Length: 181
Ligand code: CO
Image (tube, rainbow, N blue to C red; front, side):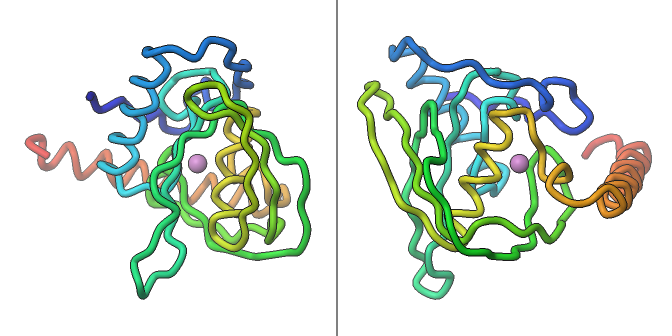
């Protein structure tokens, strides 16, 4: 197991489309396990290949289903995921490990049907709603080189990117003052 380096905006890899996975081997499993470890270490609920510099159509997620009972979907590996159906609307304040500290409200479908392959290459299908649906749409966007600020209008996008640059500058200044961090 190894922690991977998270790619932060504007890393160009975040704009790259992922390639379809055709080889389901031990390397793929190891990579997904490293991605899961990296996601948990950064308190994320989903992580796509691009976010660790890998342009393959792979994602990992573990999404809370009910905050009070602390139930989650459990750790999931989705390979070559594809949204085959969606309906409804949900507005949720999203975050992204590639935009640390930034949160923006985004409207997405509230229900999605997703086709994917598991680590053994078997074809699977799932239905997701609420936060799970939001997370899958967010992560599948990453696989197409789309980040969450691309899902809002141009004015909101500009404001969000400006806010993020400010956040990054503040973090940079903090690091300069406390080099041991
Ligand atoms: Co993200």
